Figure 1 (cartoon, rainbow, N blue to C red):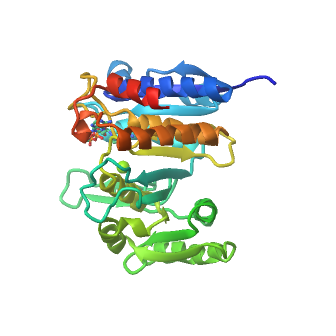
Figure 2 (cartoon, protein in one colour):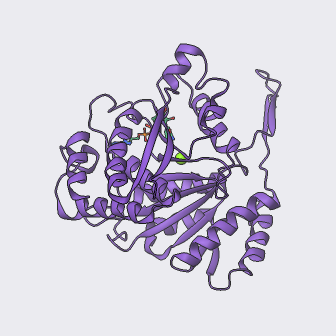
Figure 3 (cartoon, rainbow, N blue to C red):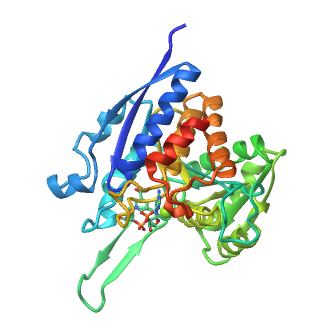
Length: 353
Ligand code: NAI
Ligand code: MG
């Protein structure tokens, strides 16, 4: 039959974002040839550099330019001199919200050949997915500032939890848990946050009734953070609100050994809109332009994209190659204690694919 073609929007962004997307694309093209699909790319220069030049991260019709794409692959944004909230609210958050990407999925594995800073994080044993609510919760636009500059200055920001918004992310997480190890942990703080978090807990209990095959529990976020460090291997799927999930997934990425490896997917599970795939790391201005960034976060994100596009075998080829380069070779980028450049590391990975 005809080869399936996927239309991919590439947004390299700033700094090392532009250095890690070409390796991801090289890997994708190899797998397309092998597994019988093709990818066509449209690149966008949307970035903090564009913001400094033109006053906006993306053009006014930016969201519409992405609408007909099958997926978005993003590098990273962030540039000294541009406030981080401009880059976040000018690009990433509009994409996540316009395309109803209400699931932020962050898998964490401690690979063989990686030294975790955490003693209890033995290779092969830690394999966790954090499911973060990605559209509402604590990251809301409801609130404001009054009396700016006066002694009685005040800032208010309301957390917004809706039955529909919480239920859909819980359903995603419970379904994922039923397909994986059958365990789910809900991050809460209903002892201190007395309105939204008891509501969250109530909805978890309600949805759990539809997934009797999943063993679930809940932990307060502070205790959960401690357990992530002390016994990371005990977790399978963790579901959390926007803020708790953000913090927990960065913590988990650090437990896994390097922020340079961690991937993320912003999913619209209904596929009404394109989903977005991006490494967890930022634009790393301290090493940008040197060609030494670790491309694994972007490459693993590309694997998540292939999985979402209906090519799970191709996605597995990538994660197998990642496991194998780390377990069987000494070639490493500098963040993992090696001397390989981004290009040298990518060449070796492609050889192992
Ligand atoms: P960062 O992730 O860019 O860097 C943190 C540290 O990790 C740096 O020392 C960096 O060199 C290192 N690092 C990160 N990724 C690496 C890789 N692939 N290979 C090797 N080393 C790597 O976080 P930081 O420094 O807090 O933020 C820098 C800029 O990136 C800021 O403007 C921030 O707002 C932005 N940022 C953007 C994100 C995004 O686009 N989603 C996410 C996080 C930060
Ligand atoms: Mg974060």
